[in-house]
Image 1 (cartoon, rainbow, N blue to C red):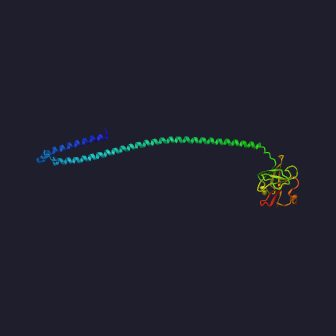
Image 2 (tube, rainbow, N blue to C red):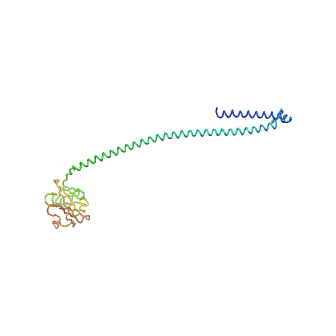
Image 3 (cartoon, rainbow, N blue to C red):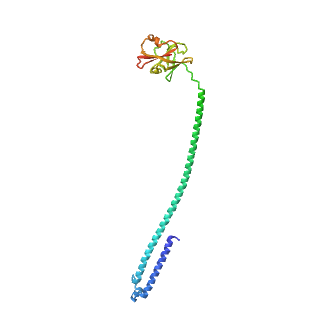
Length: 277
């Protein structure tokens, strides 16, 4: 039986009890009240209020009491409904928390699996890097024990980290080649002929680094046959561009196996000559 049905039955019983009480009060009034009051109680006059004052007062008191009972009963019903709603909310909250915990556990398991996959990938990457490093180390060891053959060179001058090719020229040349090469002016660049070879080149250009050569610097020359020789700077000077070469020949072209490198100074009015043997 629902709460609403139980309430209707309860109110019907209460109204029946009230009616019975009113009837009993009427009987009691019949034995105790004066005849005039009984006449008032039993009159058949069709007036709006046919009950005696005693009976009417008792019934009104019972009606007021019944109203209080009904009001309190409704409060109880409301409290029961509120408690039922609270219990329903509590059950729903517990179900929601259980569902969240279940999802959280599933998410935690998935996250742990993903972290484990990442750790495995990291370990594999580290192993691959170690293997690659080991192979590189083995390759380096092989290279150290069996160095690669040097690249063959011919007609090349090397100093200060630069390789400068040169071509054959002659004393009739008035200037160095305009391409990015130097040239011989006197001699052929043979590193084993026991003579001086005079090289010329432009600055700015392929011979710009001649301006930085100092006493003791090394200059390596490869001749047309691929033979090479190291020369070391022992003298340097700057002189006017229009100077008579033969006036300085003994200094500019030393005897024996030697080389001379000449280039223009930045003002283009002077030249710098460096001698090495």
